[in-house]
Length: 191
Ligand SMILES: [Fe+2]
Ligand SMILES: [Fe+2]
Image 1 (cartoon, rainbow, N blue to C red):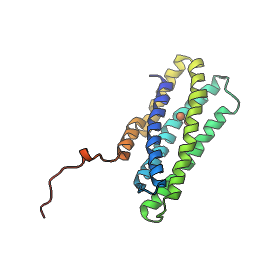
Image 2: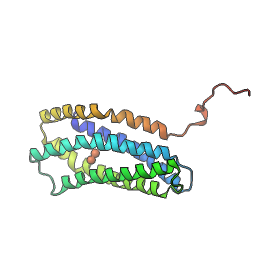
Image 3: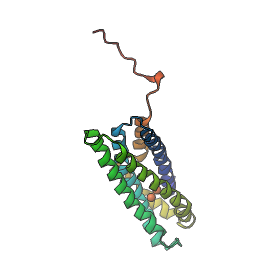
């Protein structure tokens, strides 16, 4: 698995989290109860693993593409790099709104749901652009040896943040509702 495979695989993990968050937002907008603590966890995942780890790896890729003078569309890297910053701002807004709900400072989930929607909307378009325009160019024009060295730098980034794959799987489990057949069946209290 080379550096570009790592980034693509991370996109799949992130997309699964997006789908779960999207469903939670839809439930909240329908007036159903949504857990603010799950939104806090999602925001922390975006800040630590998406921004801190995935985006940091992509910045290594972008800088390498520039250093190798790859024929990128004008403004493309500025656009995707700028979206990393905007995504981080949306994640902070989501964290603040969800924490306020959790502390009882807010009872209307509208601000929390709106911040989650901002993040979802931005990130779907962002990932699509990277996969359609950035990664294929890097795949075609960056030598295999460069991608190998990049993989080593990715491993260093991952070492300081932890595994994005494991974090997304833990978050997915947290979002999934408890199925009736898997409910806790511990001892029944007799008092
Ligand atoms: Fe990105
Ligand atoms: Fe990405």
